[in-house]
Length: 88
Image (cartoon, rainbow, N blue to C red; front, side, top):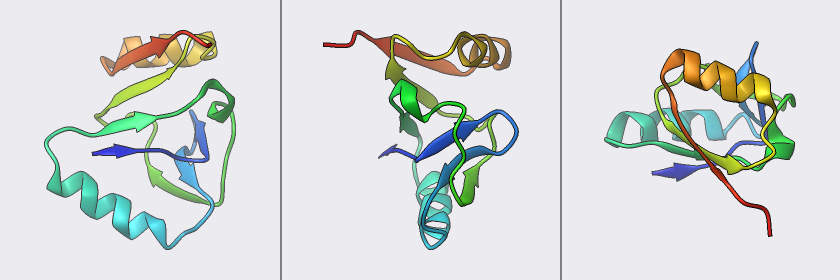
């Protein structure tokens, strides 16, 4: 399953604007073997209204090359796979 969020913060985790999406995201995470979070670099260090996953949620993060270094270090330290794509 490929999902996105409006924000990712090391304190609150992955957040969305619509709290009604939290139930759907929880269900999808339970039903899938692989969870991918798609976040462009502008989503990091931002918080939206409702938390859907903690920051150390087991998933694979796909983002742009200019992801803030503290998030790259966090994912590496936690063993969370992350892929940084070039910006075109």
